[in-house]
Structure formats: C-alpha cells, structure tokens
Length: 116
Image (cartoon, helix red, strand yellow):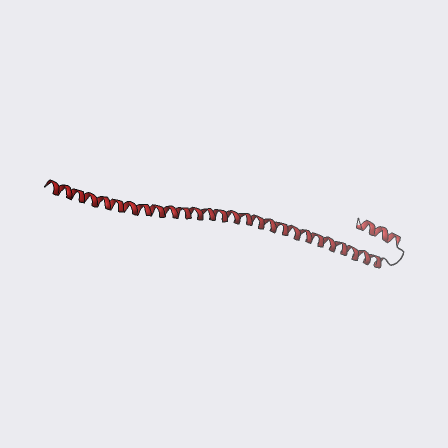
C-alpha cells in the first residue's frame, strides 16, 4: 500500500524525486518506529499483567499455607492442653493407687492382729 502511494506521488511530482523519496523514507521509518514502540508497550503491558496474576496466585497459596499452619498450631495447642490434663489425671491416679495400697496393707495388718 505504501509502495503504491509512493509510486502515485512520484508520478505526480515533476521535481526532484530523490527529495520526495527521502521524505517518504523518513515517514516510513517514523511509522515503523511508532509500530515497534506500540508493540513493545503491548508486550510490557502483557508482562505486567502476567506478573500481577502470578503475585495473586502466590498470595492465595501463602494464605492457604498460613491457614494450614494456624490450624496445625491450634491442633498442637489443643493436644498440649489435653496432654497436660492426661498427665495430671495420671498423677492423681498414681497417688490414689499408692493410698489404696497403703490402706490395704494397714487393713490387712489390723485384721491379722485382731485374729491372732
């Protein structure tokens, strides 16, 4: 299309065709430079959009990991409190057993003395 326009203008011009060619070449270079710049801006925009979408994905993954970590910590905290209750109950049961053994021995000694 540009070549066709160039040929038409050259046929109309009666003067120096080199000067006209120089003007067309300059305009063609300027148009090509504008196209290249536009393409580069489009690529930069696409890259920016891709980076932002990746950041959003990473943010979602990190939020999920944080939720899981908090759930685990809550579970561990609950487990620690349950373990403390179990240990306390175990100590109490141990003392009840010792007291029961002692009372059994005392009762056996009393019964043995009473019968002999």
